[in-house]
Length: 331
Image 1 (cartoon, rainbow, N blue to C red):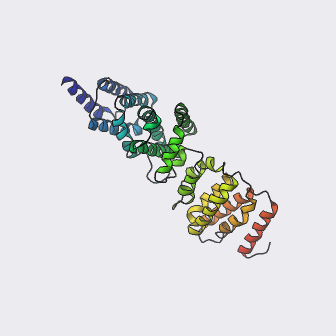
Image 2: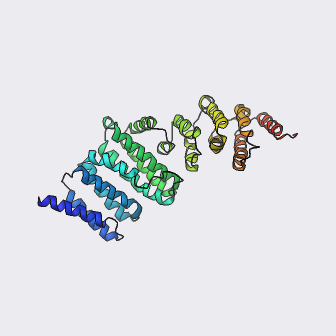
Image 3: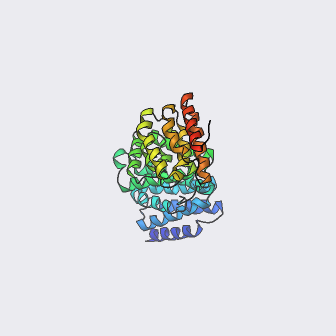
């Protein structure tokens, strides 16, 4: 009974002190919390409450010592009660304000997301160490949240922070052979989201087509830039069968949403596009006389990117003649 009272008092004390600005107080209360719960099984409501309190630290703890102290407690819970913390921490992260529901990720949320990614990696190692455990709703939720967090990092973090997070993930995947394939299959089974592209940079052309090229809104710029790692490996067959028909449909359906995407796509490919220049150019060129000035400027840039990907002078000449015809002037 005395032990239960001690745990209860420590949890209440932590709830009061968690937002303190004193690094010493943070380390002391987290150290006391870790010592108090070590070797004890906490009820699920208590762990759910702790997860919510941990998430408060994402926006406040900027020093390495405080962050290490939080990670130490989360690691202890992941080792002692893995299923319970895996059922609660991802949902708390999703509602913590770290993941941008709309708008472009900023430096503040990216910094918090960097810390949160490390937490999710702890859960992966502790709760899902073997292939047979990487299935079910808890695993899917963790992968989904992790992809959203990494999208925040990609969109707003410094280059060094991004490099550090990617290195951490790379090490995790190397330590667990086959995990990358399970991540991939899980991501493809979730509701399509451009953020998934941030988590795995290769072999995701199908996901790119569904979530970026066919997007019903303009994708964020950092998503377009990071998609280059997928597009650089596209073959002529993949372009002809998957990308070309889709981009032509997208330009007919909503050019204002897809023009910037197509421009970035053309700039990222490593293919000679001479044989497709006329087919692609017709759709883009139709927007050169658009009433929307931004759309018109994007179309000009897309045509420039297309021309730079053509090695056949006759293809560029034919495209130029088509442009003059649209503009109603003689070459």
